[in-house]
Image 1: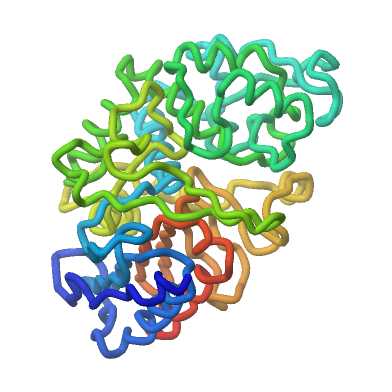
Image 2: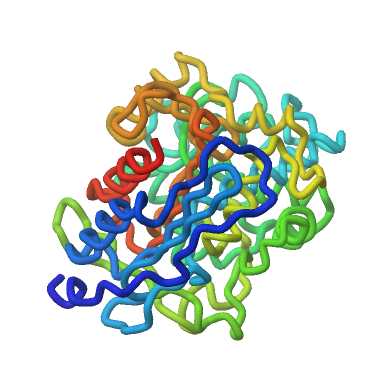
Length: 423
């Protein structure tokens, strides 16, 4: 912690710039107005929450980017605006966009069973009880639909308790339903086959369960589009938006810009674990066997701004429609019923202020950051976060590579400082 505290770097690529983004009303503010945000982030680096961070605040046509700290634990290279980060679950919104594209083209029906494309998930059985043997099951009351995958109500998801037999079976099958590293060794077809050997945890549509829906979405896109999922994402989303540094791996000629991976601190034991290796030894340094729709992408703050702005502009990028306005509205609107929320669990109090759209969380009530609900976005488990706030015409993106930043209160302090600075 003391070493990290001495490595707060000068601002890098700090600027306020205008561009042709739609919208208006006030800019992101001057560097002086946003200085308190930097002070918060310098303090977090000094406290050892992460070795460094890059963030970007856009409002109307004004963009302000800033950086503190260094790119890896014990390193000296300063964070830069073009540093590449593992964005983990911020991938989910991109994956949902791919699914909605296929819906718009009439190739996929949101409310039809996915059995046609994913026969491995037909005729489901459901655990009689979540902590029971995996062979004690009842029939599923209905098939899984594409909407179930998007809203995370397919009946299968992440458990934070490793003891139930179903969780042990997931680990034995190497499905990687939780942490993105180590990655699954199975290709998409083998992965979905193995998933299909397990019962669901709950009835389809009964409750929200995190993560698995995005993994299955990637396989679904591959089958419906008759194209590898990663190739579809590059061709239909990344290339049209100009997201040049976003992909499912970091090529060798960009590894010098790839941030090292920071710590996850186990709250029970306070033991620190490195989440991934750095540089060429990273799991993200080569193309994956299974491009993960849940957590597979790497990106930069400017690249992700292009995606976030497309959504803020109702699906349009530089005059080209990427996604329909109707799809964007559905994607960014809470899709969960009160009964589904009541049956679900996540972090304490999550559903008191959050709902879920398609690939994004939607803030449904005032919280510690804003008294006005309606913002949407999501976080990445390696230490990244993004929000679009239509009420303020505000986009905010912050990228670190330490999950301690997410769970220590540091992320909330960052967002509160942004909202104070841009009010």
